[in-house]
Image (cartoon, one colour):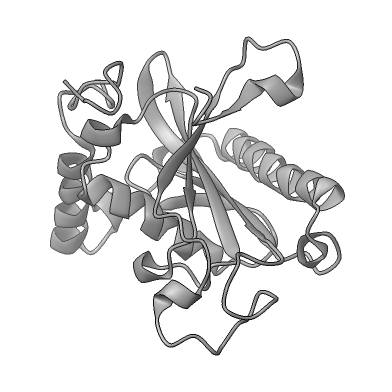
Length: 223
């Protein structure tokens, strides 16, 4: 039993094929190295057979990510997000590899992907568990982030109980409590001077059944 989350989805059932996320990702890496093509795919069958449908699907997904970014800019409390547009939203496959990304600071395609892969490699699906509605927060520079004020929110996507991908968004907050004010502190002697650091912490649960939009996002300490 997972003592941190006894209701967590059991290992091997997230993908619906009996494989753990790590086994799934290791298989992709092996096929990529063997063939020289990502996951051994030498062509995209849908694009070859129905290019118009492929482009329509691509445009809808891309539009959704750009819309999410523009919405975040309008409601952000951080002026670095609202005025400078330092944010990015990205869609990933179950292995943490980018499928599509929005406009914005696209370096965070890699930082959020690194966080997802960190969770996969360190068996997050077993403990603390990866479940529908979970939200994970990361700003740890030791696993690929740029600096602590780039805060990523990562959400697994489930369809009919199976993990089909992830979506992540990075926004640049104004301050995380480092040794100097602002988001670019340079005087610390160790990482402990960077301010608050969250290493892929499960920080919330999305409750789509809630009546009020604010109630749909429940911080982990109330869940």
